[in-house]
Length: 211
Image 1 (cartoon, rainbow, N blue to C red):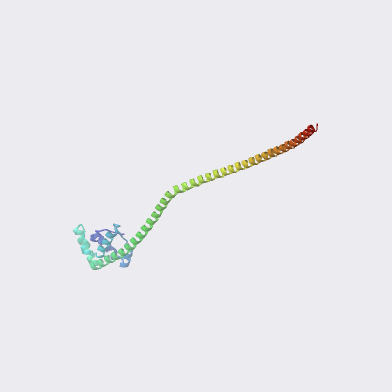
Image 2: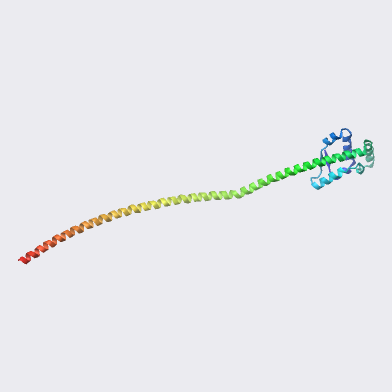
């Protein structure tokens, strides 16, 4: 695992670790086994570090202790500085390509995660807005149902009153008809009596004239 920061290409001990790796296995194996991770996740900084490592030159790498630097350089020189530089640059190019793929996958995953979080947030917002509306609609439905029940009751009462009025009116009409009939019959009797009295009176007058 190589954690590459801005100073990594200039640290001779870091270069020595890579030199040791390349010295004991084939270049293909070394490149496959190395996993380079950027110390920072800022895209511009990562690309700059990878570009610097792609132009790696062991001559620009140093140690804090000059004596240690001299010892390391003797070994690296024995291995071959140019060959070592080429291997490190090849490693940097491969890691850069791998890092770009990783960043793309990471960006895609991050976008997917952000979209999912946005969906959840929107769902919560919609739910928070809809719940009061649904509750209000349910309350309105309940109120409307109660109002309809009241209207049905009132309508039934009105129909009952109309029926009562109709029945009462029919009864009154029947009573009036009976009274009218009775009055008519009484008037007819009185008229008949009047006719009889008139006839009797006429007879009496006729009798008086004869006398």
